[in-house]
Length: 113
Figure 1 (tube, helix red, strand yellow):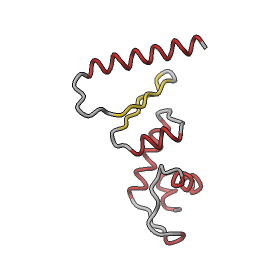
Figure 2 (cartoon, rainbow, N blue to C red):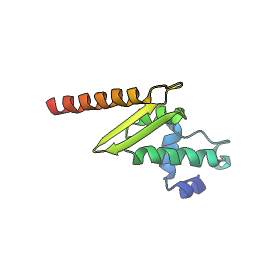
Figure 3 (cartoon, rainbow, N blue to C red):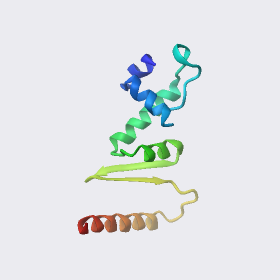
Figure 4 (cartoon, one colour):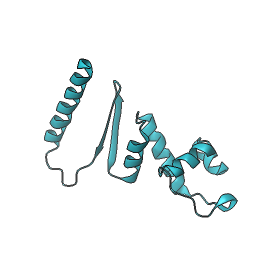
């Protein structure tokens, strides 16, 4: 655990929390015999990338971590977009327009509240 903490800059306490939350996989073995691998380092780096992008919800992070096709864009002016890549996406321009419309609507609703 101390090697993993040192390699990733995370505290042992936070690593244990992230394991409990399902963000980081459980180690092989238990206690002092627990073995952590590059898989654990990669999970912690991906977690940090999501946090750096402005994703703060642990459930959103968990969802993003469970899918290799999840992407996070942002933050841009306080906005973070999390989406799942669509398989067989044929009209990217249409998707961009739908996302743009949704973001504009969300911003308008935020101004009204």
